[in-house]
Image (tube, rainbow, N blue to C red; front, side):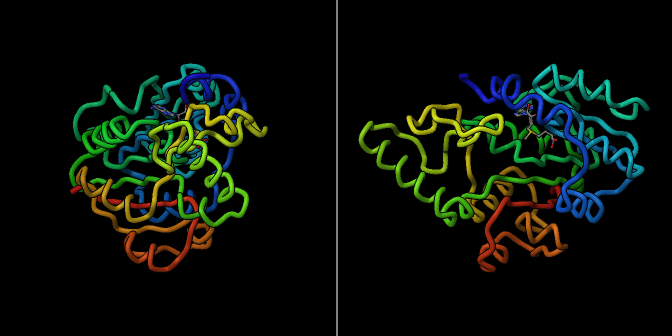
Length: 253
Ligand SMILES: C[S@@+](CC[C@H](N)C(=O)[O-])C[C@H]1O[C@@H](n2cnc3c(N)ncnc32)[C@H](O)[C@@H]1O
């Protein structure tokens, strides 16, 4: 497998095509920050789990895209009420008009799934382009601080750092191979074989989103957001010492 698109087309396909139900942290953010009457887009929809849950919550004018055509077919099949405009699309190059949406959902760490910094910037610029000024965006990111704290993941990070120093590979320590693929340990990770995902630090999330015109209104980590605990900024979140998947609500300036 060369790319993350290959990963989702093969070993990760089944678990995302049929998945149902919102996580508590997703339900909290969607209920608190999004309005049921606004036009809403979900990026990287997989089998449509999140956007179909929005439909069930009474949201209208729904759209979603994914770059794996099989996911889009699966999502359309599950959408028996035809509530969602599902399309094949790549987060780096979107066909939607400027300001087409009142609110956008970039959860399940879609921006962490783009390997290069240029691609992550490009996808974020596209997100900023398609949401209207004053519109709302929900993002989540793989959290590097949490990786550093887990005993086995911290050991793996040290191992990869050493391997890269020996092999001369110029790769950020935050760019990591998949440790699990399709529910199984990925032995390719021991050889530092890609594809890779990118783990964000909390202060970096602030810089990244601000650079594209997003103003952060709330930030939290998964297990806390699930209990309704959220901070007013990335700085406050970083200062709290919490670690986990990073969730952010933003307003487009
Ligand atoms: C972790 S899965 C989440 C699926 C779905 N959002 C959910 O929560 O059930 C990530 C999804 O993002 C999609 N994806 C990753 N990179 C993408 C890109 N550049 N453009 C469009 N979709 C992408 C994958 O195909 C996959 O469906």
